[in-house]
Length: 116
Image (tube, rainbow, N blue to C red; front, side, top):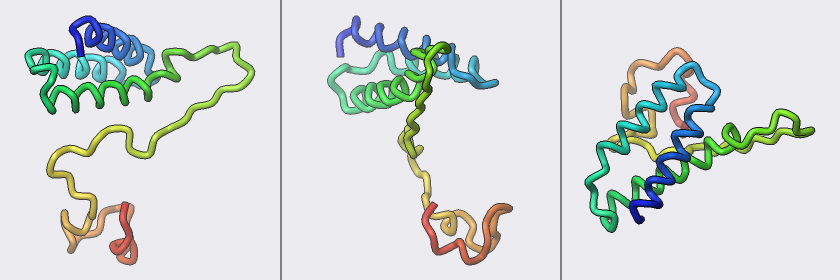
């Protein structure tokens, strides 16, 4: 990705984050800025840089409905993605691996066999 393209992606994702309807909007905005700063020196051809670009593009797609929102439209459609962001490294999907002896407040014993 060229410097100009990454700059454009950066500006567009910040614009989307600034219009995101959340009480944590500015925290999200600052986290995006910090993430871009942390990765600014990556080699554009590296796998890590490509992964970061993919996450940023997916995030931009998730923010697009809020950026391109037309309040006068007759119909509003929001499509959501089940898991828009990749899980953190070391994340365990099966809750029984975390603490099998103690069910959480929203779980029942028979739910332990299902995937979440």
